[in-house]
Image (spheres, helix red, strand yellow):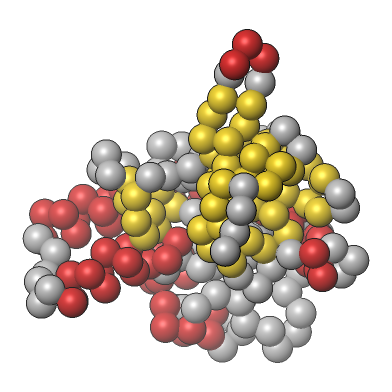
Length: 210
C-alpha cells in the first residue's frame, strides 16, 4: 500500500499508473502563504535513471510537451531532477481515459451515444492539429508525431474536457532521440500500416490511429 511521500516540493499522494519507463502519482504542490495545487507527477523508474536512452526519451518528452499549449493536450507545469530521478509535473485530470469508459460501457452492455463519440473525436483531432502544426523557436515546422494515439492516452474529465496525454514516444524531425532499428513504439492495435512496418511516418499516422 502506497503511503504519501515527500518528493521535493511535492507530496505524492497516490500512485495512479505505472509503465515501462515511469510511474505517475496524484500529488500536491505547495508554495508560499498556504498555496497548494493538485497535480500529476510522472517520475522515471529508479532502475532506468542510469540508462542514457531512457533518460534522453524522458527529456525529449518534457521538451516536446512543454511547447504544446492547447485545451485538448495535458499541460506541463514543471520538469526537473530530484534524488537522481527525472520527473514531470503536469496537469491532473479528474476523470477517466477512454479505455476505462468503453470497458465500463461493455460491462453494462451499452454503447456510447454517437453525439458523444463525435464530440470526443473532434476534440482529439483539435489537439492533434495543434501538435502537428507546432513550430520551433525559429518558426520552422517540427513535424511532431504522437505515435501512440490510443484509448489509454485520451482522458475525459468529469467536466467534459478531452485531453491527449503521454507524448513520451512523440517524435519530431530534429529531436536527437531516435528509435532503435527494428523497434516499434506504440500499441500495435492502433498503428497505421506504415508505422507497423517501420516505414517513414508523417502526421497521418496519428489520424489513422484516431
